[in-house]
Amino acid sequence: MPTTLPVFFFSHGSTAMLQNRTAAAAYWEQVGRQALEQGVERIVMMGAHWETMGEKILVSANPAPPKQPVAWVDPARYVDFDLNPDLELASEVVGLLSDAGFDAALEPKFEQIHDTFMILKWMFPGGKSLPHVIVSHNARFDPHFHMKIGAALRPLRQANTLIIGSGGAVHNLYRNNWAQVIRYRDNLAQERPPEQWAVDFGEAFKDVVTQNTGPALRRGMARLMQHPQYRDAQGTDDHFMSALFAVGAAGSVEDTGKPNYAGAETWELLNMRNSQFQFGDWPQEPHVTPINAASAMIEVDAK
Image (cartoon, rainbow, N blue to C red):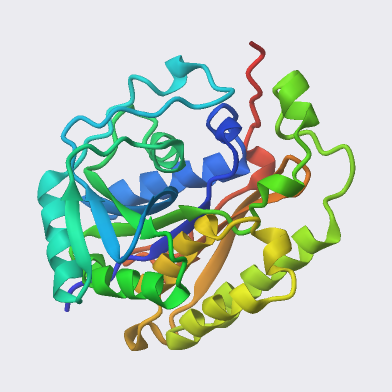
């Protein structure tokens, strides 16, 4: 019987998360190391900053995609990173989505955005990503539509392919404290405790992930959009769609009873809660990606 790889949801945070090695970045590094150790060959990602109109879903198919500039980060930190796009995988993804009834197509003019290449760069510090593709989300922000995208791609979990959603568990740009990063380029300073809504919704998100499996996981994540603090935690819906994509790939009947885990967490800009999650176990030990936040060795660029 083929092995089934875990699925991940990463809260990527602000662009400054590319600059600093935080607990979240250390977690992404460990996931990358484990992916290589466990024989992962390819990655499919959905981010938060590439959306399409109507019913269309696009899949990255640019053999040499440029990286869009990253605010507050020295370009030397990312310009030379080899994205290693996988055009063969892109066609395979379009085929799976089309078979599931989606209007899917390749996008040969795709430009990579920080929400995805930031993750890949931390996962693979050697300078080259595993072969990968990016799937767009849809501007209708329908939770069930995005879960169905993940469900359509679930078979890739049994084809040495890691499925990752990159968004934000608590990501409201309108309610962050920007003064520290604008004045001092310090996104990690917490002058005071985060506001209660950020704490509460983050805990609700974590509870849905860790207390549900199978189809109940999908239902729980969709219901979070009706949570009374959802709009406090999500200023716009775009950073939540990749979470729905992830549980679509990790919430089938076959996933029932398989535990899900909360990983590292990094607070920034006062109210941005960058929580990381793993759905399912690695085929081989260790089953749970470990992280010791105290050893993350936060490094703030002095430039």
